[in-house]
Image (cartoon, rainbow, N blue to C red):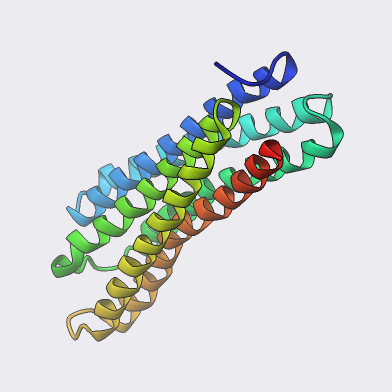
Length: 215
């Protein structure tokens, strides 16, 4: 049961929809990467449109939440905190969309020997986001639980960061990957890492809100 009422409950309902739209953006991005690595370019290009669709849905929900906030949900002193939280969550979807555009527009050669590790980095970023999602869900239920999930988000981001750096090292050390492909995969993998980084940024905002609420 939520800890708020009235307009605040309405904000959390839309916020949960926003979280799901961002998650769908990330899931479709993961499908896109898997299709590209399987050299199914037609499917990958189709999935770009789905990534864009869910990212636009997330954008619309973010704007709706901002409107609700500025129309009086929460005390004035707290509105900025929630506006920043929603913006940071939305930034996660932006990173996935950006990575998908680079991948499909530049079309780097697939490094088959590293395909599984590329998927692992994507999965690690998705799991980091899901921990963030849990922390936000608990904000209006149990602030202690919300704080627990912010810590888990941080831990998963560190793990994701390690996978990212290990993979980039292997890409640049490889003699099988062209210089062009190395530069493009560097951009893509860095953007994938941004998904986890931005999820952690949002979890920092969750932590701030939870600490304020707990007093």
